Image (cartoon, rainbow, N blue to C red):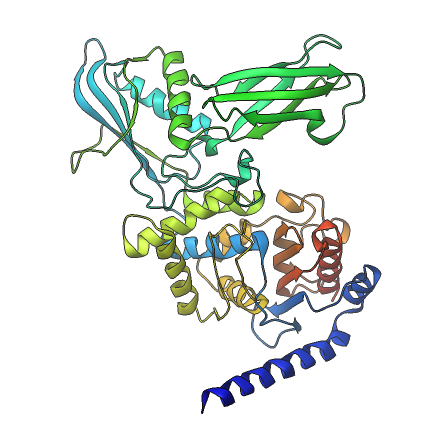
Length: 477
């Protein structure tokens, strides 16, 4: 067929599709139509799929093939493929080498301590403390050399943490790193020790290389307001210096903010110095990035929590950087080191195709949903949810989602008669509101339910209201 005729055919087909979808708007459930009408929203930005997990025709499909921004429900794709490729028992190894001689009698290492990051998504402060405590238990105390970090597992372009929304210190903007201690998050806690007095600031985890400038003052008033009147800034001309300022209401006795204030290697170095000293150890050298020894057996290995537990933390609490690490790790499992985003994307596409899930229109920017560019159709996500229900790792996948009215991001939603009857992941960005997962009806049948809604200000409340109306409509059948 000549190219002009092809273009005409595709245009006509697209126009017919739009006409069919507009006409089908009358077939939306009445509760959904009432929400749209009540907020003056058209149905053009809405996609819905309600599909029985045990097969059969969809109970409802509206604009199912239209690619839309899915926001954080993209994490369902990343986490399911990770379970499929890695398995629920997969672990990430953080390996330690002694680049030098250790004197067993004195505990002195004449050389460098080398840590190779294995991409552990959940190397929290508590687990990092345990890692260092294990090194002390093996006889290491004084390091007469440097701390060398091998971060070569990930081959990624530099990440600008402020590129998404101009908030580079926000913890949700942290990028992936193979040695990510405590998700690179610092908790600043303001504590007022005397009524009306100036608040002190506590830092957790302790960072030996952090300089904190407390410019917070007190202001009379109740304990309310955005961030309780406190702002956090990193000094542009003084790396490692953080300034807290603003007016903290006298009605507040304690308040915490979480921020990311250093590069991953500097952050790990600061935590290492603080904890190692606390454990009675010392280190004379500096921080360096380098390479671990070749095939030599490590002095110690710290294994992560299993992938099933990681997936649960990703979906229950919508953790962005952990989702991105899952995508990278799946790519390594299929194509080998080093981890790249392209390998992860190819792995997701191949895994979905192998399961018979349509991937037309699917674009994954980073796997977390924290993206303006990611696209997915409700039909793709609904097909994946149905395939996942028949998958050998269905129990681990379904259990990773928030439970309506009970936990995660749904703990304050869909309570009452629907509490406990929906396992679903939520998503929200500016002008984007989404939800996807499984809903059980009163009669005991289960459906895969997907709502992708892209419309102006839909994230401010109308999207959630529409989703709740649809979920209740499915549950009441």
